[in-house]
Amino acid sequence: MTHKNIPLLFLFCSSLIWAEPSAFELQSGATKNDISSLQSSSKTLQNIATDLQNRFTSLEQTQDGFKSLIEGQNLTIKKFTDSFFALQKSFDELKAENQTFDGRLKQGYVQIDELKAQLLSQQEDIKKLQASLQELNRVMTESNNSIIQQLTLMSQFLEKTQKIQSLSEEENAQDKSKEEKEKQEKTIKLKKNNKENFNDAKELIYKKEYKNAEYLLNELIKQDYKSAESYFMLGDIAYRKKDYEHAVEYYKKSVSLDEHASYMPVLLWRTAWSFRYLSDKENYQKFIDLLIRLYPDSEQAKKALVNQEKDGDAKTQKKTDKSVKK
Image (cartoon, rainbow, N blue to C red):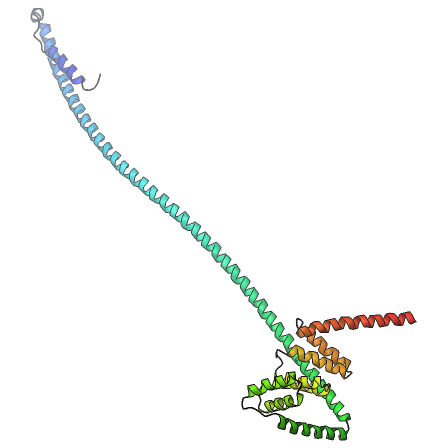
């Protein structure tokens, strides 16, 4: 039975109490008292029923209020839930973006590390290159000093050789030089353009007209036009004329003016052979070694290596022959 049916029950009971008494009941006075008592109890029950009804009504209203409150709370919870899921979704999206950013950031760090490694490698290569250049400069300096030293020794050797010559031979040489110079002045004329005179000198050397070539080269040296190469060409003329002492002297002057000239391998090669023809094997070997060390890829250096191998084989054969004779 529900609480809504309780008030109806009390009403039904009160109707029974207030009903008309039977004839038997009217004949008894005790019955009238009982009826009065019952009526009083009925009123009390009616009041109780009315109070209960009011309470039930109040409970229903309270229940409805709770329902409304609960519904309101449910709506609030739903709103919070929706807000929470929206925030959760935003957080997940932000987290995904953050992960993507972290991936890009890690990739950027990797690229930075690679660039740093490349930079360090390049710096090491630069240091090695600088060290190589310093070593090359040191070797070139030593080589230049060695060349100058060798040329100084050549000069001393030539001075000693020249002193041995007799005064009469020097006078004759001077007379011949004057005669040759006079002939040169008569057989060739200088041009205004030094470049043309220089080319003419080369052509005259090719034609073996050495006197005219020497004249042009000496005039060019006086005007300080390609003096280093002019001395080199004078050295070649002397070398071809088998005047090895003057050849060495000219080569020395050429080196002192330009020690990095393109013709330097040829100069060292012919200087070495000039000393060999002068029976100065020590200076010959020094210049051969210098040629091989400074210009190993040159044609002259390759020839020098071949000659050294031949000389080595010849020395070995001589030692063998001597041992056989013993």
